[in-house]
Every structure is written in structure tokens, then in C-alpha cells.
Length: 198
Image 1: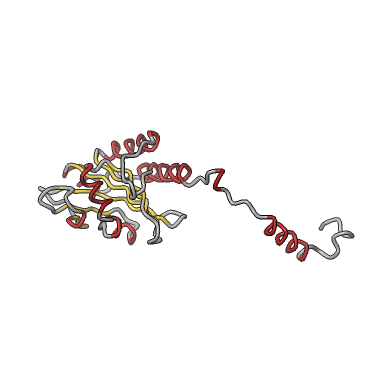
Image 2: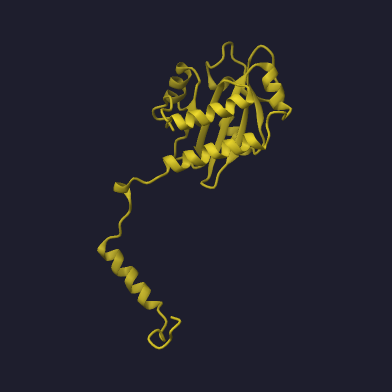
């Protein structure tokens, strides 16, 4: 997973293969898998095949704070359609609009939002030809299998990137161990030496 503070292509081939499997089943080659903590203090993680100039601008201008796709995904549990109404696609995230339908002649995309148990919003976005997006819009391709695979992708991503390295594990100090021992003694059963169940 790639942090916005250094947005680059993901090198984890297992995650990339899972993403391509999902986008292939949706009939789209363009994708973005974004995980944004709902807490404003943390930066999102994004894996996408957006053009490099877009990635650079997104990172430099901290567009993750105003990205209409992420803002809408945070409020939604239903998939939604969006369009890039700029003169050229991928020029500015501020040209993206959530839309109720496909608009010919501009970049059209579709986002599947999810909300996980760690208070993250996930936005799995695809974009492509008008016909493909109309199919998705009518839910012909959005079935349980697609959602299941996005959930598996997200679960494996969480497992890989939320593991605490051994050198970062919190070890209790001698004083903290003494306090825990004292508290444990305070709550011991007074009949402990006489009662076989304690």
C-alpha cells in the first residue's frame, strides 16, 4: 500500500493481482483502491494506475482532503457514478463530480465504497468505456462475488500493512509490571487458599 506522502505504484504483486482480478471481472482497466482513515490526522493509502502527473499533483496539493470521490464515499454505503468534466481527464480532482448517469465525451467512473471495522473508508474505483459503466450502473456486474473479492483484498491488505514490527512492540516497564501485580492482588478472592475454584 502506498501512502499519499510518497504516492507511487504499489510493489506488492499479490495485491496488484487481486485488484486486476476485480477490474477484469468488471470489464475495466482503470482502477484506484483507496483506504482513508476517517480520522483527519492520518493520510490515506492509495494504489492506482492513474497517470503519473495526476499522482504527483494529488500528493503535492494534498487533494485527498477535497477529493469528491473520497468525500462522497465517506457518506455513502452504495456504489456511485462519477465523471471528470475537465477539458482533459486527470487534470484536476476538482473537476470530478458525482453523477447519476454516464455522460458521453468525458471520463466516467464508478466507485464501490466500504466501511471497515478499523474506522476506514474504502473506495474501490474503476473507469472505462461508456457501455461498461452503464452495465455497472445497472448492477449487472456488481454482484456478491465482486463485493466478496473487494473485502478479501481489503482484509489481506490490512493483515499485511497493520502488522506491528517486533522492534515496535510495546513492552511493559518494571514499574508497570509491579502495578499490574499489585492490582491483581487487590482483586484476588480472599478465600483463594481455601477454595479450590479460585
